[in-house]
Image (cartoon, rainbow, N blue to C red):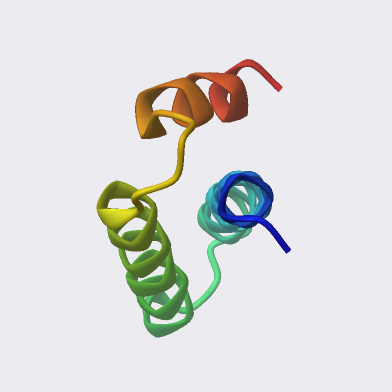
Length: 67
């Protein structure tokens, strides 16, 4: 898998994690569950930010927000 494709998949995962966190918040799930998802969000975000792919991270982030 190319680096650009991998970043797109990570951006998709980031979007889904954010959706999952919102669902957990909306359902009053125990805080420790949301904390684990929040940690995963930060880890994926950091991985994307460090990526050296040809596609700029800011473009991937904007695309994920628009979906």
